[in-house]
Image 1 (spheres, rainbow, N blue to C red):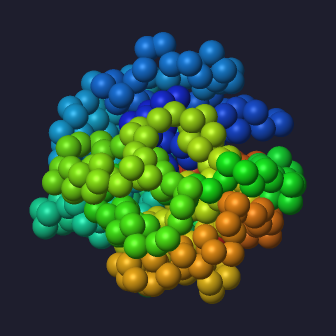
Image 2 (cartoon, helix red, strand yellow):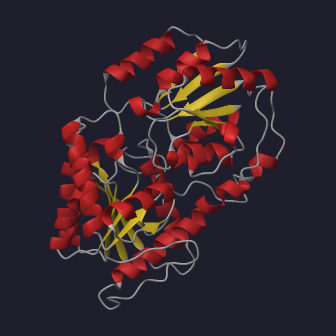
Image 3 (cartoon, rainbow, N blue to C red):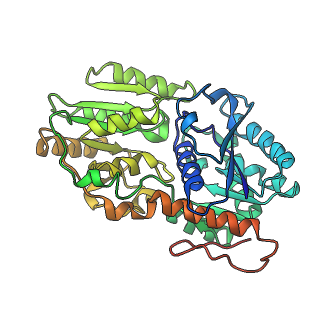
Length: 392
């Protein structure tokens, strides 16, 4: 079975949660026992590294196909997805898997071309602060197209799934992002951790308003924490007033470090040295960076938005969005109780739903059901325990 993946910047390099998820799942799908999948990953050419360091490590059955796209924020995703859908119309894959509600705007065109379409709804992007009214309207339309025209629409967060099912009165499929392989990353949570170099608070994410790095810098600047550093991992996709404000605020504090966009191995190295992970966002889908930090046994502080509350973390992990005073108090308390750095936390039970192999198998089953949907019209696909879906 041939599957074409579309709607993101690329794998083996570009930063972003969707990109990390697609790369992880593509590798795992190709490695599944009994898998007969051939995966073609359509990437945005300006973001493709030549040659990427990880290219040689891609498993057999995963192929990259760069296609030109603009690099301006309003047009990048839509233009590239349009070209990618037309390319799929020529290639005729058994399944076209589109990621994101912006690219989901092209689901009707894909159906018109006779393609079998799966769309993953990674989050309500129209709630992001960076978009104006026109972009938000287009993203809402993209969500409608994804839900109404995809043969199967996957949602990565159970709270979002419930909202969408009420809004559109249709059944959707819940499959979370893949972030950890239980038994390996989770083992780090219970193993002894060297505390000497762990006096580091870390946040990982693009420099965009909804990540609220300015709140974190302000809260950190208020605490008394000799020897501690704040590290902001991630870069700005496009220069903006917010990105410049974050850079200016960080430059005034020598203990605040901005790494810019770095590869996943460097991100892992920073997480391994950290004592605490903080995510004060006002909007998230299902942040892979948070799951990876938990997989490494880091204590976490996150905002109390519904999509993060769905993770059912302990109450003391949650703080109100934008309340820098309470965030500062929480940071000071953590520093005072962990003078030599954070201790290990065993998040194994919380991470069980995000196991890479389980997510890949559920995705594989969706592909099988979608590819065979014409022969199984009117029948509900069996997608396994813990995953519910409905063809529509």
